[in-house]
Amino acid sequence: MNLVAGVIFAAVLLSGALDLYLERRQAQVVAAHRERVPAAFAAEVGIEEHKRAADYTLARTRLAMGESLFDTALAVIWLALLLAPVYAAIAHPVPPGLSRSVALAIAVGAISYFLHLPFALVRTFRLEARFGFNRTTPMLFVFDQLKGMALQLALAVPLLYGFFALRRWLPGYWWILAWGGLMAVIVAAIVVYPAFIAPLFNKFTPMPDGPMKISIEALLRKCGFESKGLFVIDASKRSAHGNAYFSGFGKAKRIVFFDTLLDKHAGDEILSVLAHELGHYKFGHVYLRIVETAILAWLAFIVLHWAFATDTLPRAFALPDEPGLVLIIVWIALGPVSHLISPLMNHLSQRAEFQADDFAKSLVGGEAMIAALTRLTRDNLATLTPDWLYAAFNYSHPPVPERIAHLRE
Ligand SMILES: [Zn+2]
Image 1 (cartoon, rainbow, N blue to C red):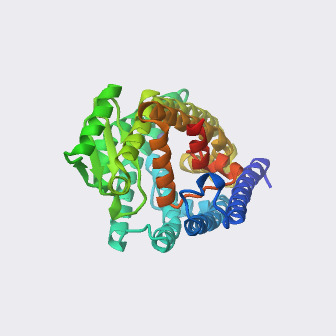
Image 2 (image 1 turned 45 degrees about the horizontal axis):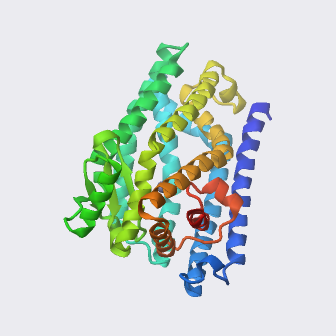
Image 3 (image 1 turned 30 degrees about the vertical axis):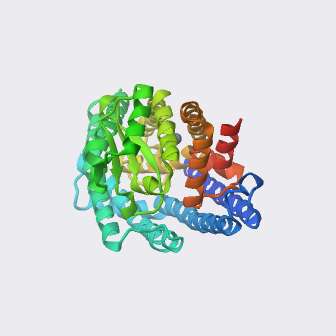
């Protein structure tokens, strides 16, 4: 076997094995702690509730193991078997050029998407339904998928044409322009998301007047936070999981509450969730996230620049030197790399969560935040006893026991 192909196959297989190992650890640790509520939560969380959270986590972890196996097998199958016939099927009707490269990338994306659908179906209608979270109807599911697909196509087709055109017309420094273009699109997406994209999926209603809104506005004034308003979304039409977020930049920022959060939480808990979100804003976490993305995208474009300058990758897999194929091979090969750096990315994200918690504590006090976190954990059946290594690779938020211990410091 060609050395480059061997290295990529080995990386994909090792990354899949690492995933399975971590998921097995998570399952073992959660199962081992299933029979006893951790001492710090013994007052709030009952044993039946704790067992149910363990069962939910175990069911999710088992599904994730199936998905890891499937993803790893699929990556190998793409490289070893499937790219050649898909290329042949597209090269026959589509002449060489930009359209062929774009068609190839879209075809591989679409096939992967459909092969993944069964997992989404099982997750929504079996797993989430079994634990009483799912409220998505089959009709809503189909519409969500269609809207998601249309949106992805509308974004991907022009981006891919731009990408391949730049590469062809400016062979020397195309990648710097492509990187700049991609970052501009990402920033634009963050700007238009709240007003144009999110409303495609949810109904945004201005928060009704009342004591809750008055205390929220008082809190916003206290922090000098300006925004385009407070909204409630009908998250309950899909799922019973509760949350809140804010999105957008500058004055176009919106604060969005899930109706499921407002329904279940006490007033001071809702304020503490908001205060946490304001902490993210105060510390400029959105900008930090954009800088991280810019650095990672820069590194990915350096790899792409190298990959397009030679025919090493397609030759390694006995494929024709076609830019569309090169892009797909790089995409698959970078999967294990992003898996390896995920603990670093999660560490940065978890640190930001602790900062936002500190901010919330300074604003509304630690007890309200602890109460809100405890309720969110109970309502979402999140495990109180995750495996630390699994969490390092998979949790963008610190495990709740750690967040509460931090708030109590
Ligand atoms: Zn947060």
